[in-house]
Amino acid sequence: MLLIAVFGAATTTFAQPNERTRKVLEDKERVSADGFWIYNDLPTAFAQAKETGKPLLVVLRCLPCTECVKLDDEVVDRDPIIRPLLEKFVCVRVVSTNGLDLSLFQFDTDQSFAVFLLRDAETIYGRFGTRSHRTDWIGDVSLTGFAEAMRGALEMHAAWPRDAEAIKAKRGPVPAITRPEEFPSLKQKYAYTSSLDYRGDVVRSCIHCHQIGDAIRDEIRARGEPMPESVLFPYPHPKSIGLILDPNSRGTVKAVTPDSPADRAGFRPGDAVTGVNSQPILSIADVQWALHHVAPEGATVHWQVERAGAVQAIPVELEAGWRRQDDISWRVSTWGMRRMATGGLRLDELTTQERESLPTKIGPMALRVKTVGQYGPHAAAKQAGFQVGDILLSIDDKTDFQSEIDVIRYGVTAKRPGEFADVEILRGDQKKRLKLPMQN
Image 1: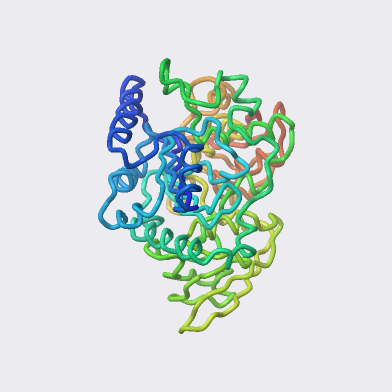
Image 2: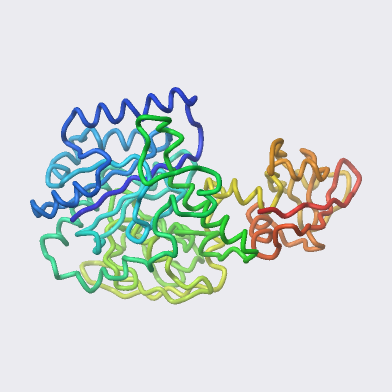
């Protein structure tokens, strides 16, 4: 069966509570009335797909979230580009992660659009849906690419069991917690259940996908453990190894970043990625899945590409720390880790010209405080004396922090909740030292 899940992360601007409720209720009424989609009922959809032998298409969508809304509308309204494909599937729309089986639906929880392509509840054909910017999905996904992934899944479905062995690795290990409402941190804060409360406050009863990732990070932090790089830098974008893939294709290389791992391995524009570690590739999201499950200390990833009509194997050597090349500044998870590691500070890198204009000579590190959180745990840095415009010169006498993400990584890997980081700052023409608290 083909299972497509569109996950909405509540990452940016939400409407007011009454507007959010209106959106949720109107979506249910509109989509249910159309009759094309099964609404919020996965068991019925799986049963119908099994009975008919058709693929299954499931859209999981966080309705108040505005990212990818146009793409979502085009999918739901059966855009002419993909309508002939949609009609081959049993279609179901799910609008929350309450009760979701996380042993099957494992995904980048910072996304607002993700796709799963499955044969059944055990077998995943592939995934679709990628994001590398907070609000702009152009360049990562497209309806054309969506259609290509769907065609690929249909081909695998028709040829089954040809690819049965190759796609076994598309299922990750079973997590310790398999339902979002069972995470301890979510239980403590909210009275979530396995379903939405349409008779009560339906919006407040909804578990957003980003809350799953938040709960995982909160559990690790509460145990006082260093944040694993696979959690800190999840589902690395192909750009992190130097591959720019065409979003209108399943995996055609559009460009290769000079002197990147992909460049050194011999990738060329026009190469069509067909497999990663023997997993068939239907989209960029499949590439991210394979990269996510690579050993965090570095590994050799084996790629299969079509070049000039022939299949070619390309091994890519990934050194320890390779995930740090991925940009995570757009992620909603970064907000929670700012609370943990910077006390609510947002930091900017100084340009060369700005550094040269400073009244005092400084060393290699220069990160300016862009904003200071004002409320709750995000006000910890404010309470410690930090101000907008302060320039961080060192942390615990280390001066190799070149970005805000470097500071966050240090705080969630080298420091524990309750500890402090000794920070040297430049304020005006005076250098000072402040204690930055590390938090849960």
